Image (cartoon, rainbow, N blue to C red; front, side):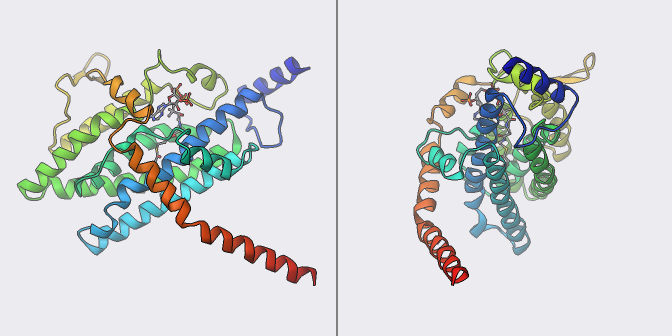
Length: 311
Ligand code: FAQ
């Protein structure tokens, strides 16, 4: 019977039908979605921290409004994604508990510091640029609630990316010192952005099954290559140099070839040993503890309303 259900499920996936929360699904499909969607949600929430660092120090009111809007969007993305994960039968408390206990993964990229204002430009341009490359195909993910959440998220990410690129452009066309700041931020964010796409295809444990289930549409290396191809001309337009001496355009393939990624750095970050891993989890724990009174008040308010309704 299980085999028949599995067969029917794969037929639906192959026919591009969306799988909905109440539909039968293999346990592995459910588990992998909970894993990916919750890691994605945590990334959005932890991802608010590096940029949040600059909200109070944005150089103009206009920049501050844009940055505030971006960081708020990220909070919103985290909430839709936790809701999408909840449709798979896991509670938000459980997922947040895993993050605060240091047991859940979130994107490696958010464990790097943001020492200068140019980092805000580099994050928007490169980190949101990489996020869009990876997330546009997720709008066609076989699981309905995740796919639908991604549509709105991608539209907002697109505004975030433009905000970052425009900021980089202002710095790159500014004083020599501003241009140096922009170059320094590109130097620090380039390689970590390439790591966002995950391990190489040979090392990627989940890729082949996720592609068969149409959760993933393209492999990690395919998306990384697309990102490099799209981003190198943008760097050239800024008059900045990508920090990779091996980067070159191959006219035969129509793609840029690039140097080797430092996977030791990536693996260390995944183990919790990146420059800001501890600080990020500590900030989330503090936010959770500081928010305890809000959760208690909300529960007390709901109980009171229920009592009134019973009278
Ligand atoms: N960091 O077998 P694979 C954003 C883990 S964008 C940490 O290749 P899969 C927007 C992976 O989870 C960032 N861990 O896995 C924003 C797995 O671990 P597990 C978030 C990584 O799932 C912008 C193991 O390595 N985006 O937040 C990373 O097939 C600016 C083996 O890897 C998403 O989450 C990494 N970079 O492919 C916010 C997108 N890469 O569970 C604020 C959705 C891999 O076995 C500011 N996720 N790992 O212990 C995906 O598309 C996929 O999950 C991949 C990984 C492509 C990330």
